[in-house]
Length: 452
Image (cartoon, rainbow, N blue to C red):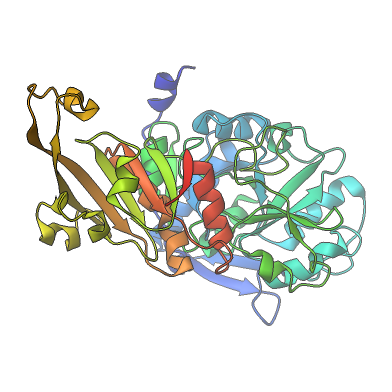
């Protein structure tokens, strides 16, 4: 099937679901932990429950994946045990077949059943990680970070309970338990583990709203569960505790500092590269270019200036700015050469919550021999030339959590502005829990990284 046929195959529906309106969650553990046994009694008169059950039915009976929210980003889920369902994920995303998928579960009992069915081992307790089945190195991580944005690499049982395409021919598989109650309810009611990469077209910025999913996958999938914006904004951290020392294969919502506070993880190291890797990936996000808008992305360490911007584009261009801690729009003003056409617009909101637009006017005296002169087809005489630079600017804030939450959305919004280049202000990757994950995603998106 060619891309045009794929994109027009379905009339994509967006169904709103509020987890608070689904019904009553009941827990076996006094602390109401999802790690133990739990259940959900749906409300009879809840439209949210009706909408969620439509997604459940599709997961159980169809090969077309369902988009749904997690605390990190929106996922594109399918029954991980059925090859036709998993193939639907790769088809919808146009995802390379050797890029493995993460398994999402709703309880430890579900994970143990997947492992017990092939190993024949028995669990020690229904509410505690089994010493026999789940490697002991992961027990402190499960206790502290699950449910949450952490994926564990486990040995693949033989025979595998998963469709072969899930693991990309690897001898391991990644699994996590999301903290989103909506995601947990969907997996629980479906009764199957869900393979779920981010619900975007392959290589594009990950989606943090249902609108992002619809923009990328409209016509490619039938159903999007809209649970509102995601709270974390970057994907889960992926760790491998099967090696010595353990390593982080992908940075995410759980930082290396947080991991090092857990027994057995004091020496955990970074086992990933910020650029795309050539060898077979051990985890999602390692091999291929990811998180990239159509526009060229320039990652800048240091101050913003007119000289930095014009180094990478011609005049009469449109640029995007993704600002974090120090950049200001007025940094583009160069005395005697540039002015903001309407200064008020540099501080006015635009179509988005954080987006505003303004125009920089560039005035310069040039000669007939100047390359700029020839580019602008001026007469063969010295004259003052006025050009313009259209700017779309987004302020992501100064806190790492808000930067992480807004990063992918900002790249998408600036791309929709049809800018030629997006300049992104780099952050200190050692600052804050999600800083390394933010910089990892930016480096994978960026064509160029510079010091200004």
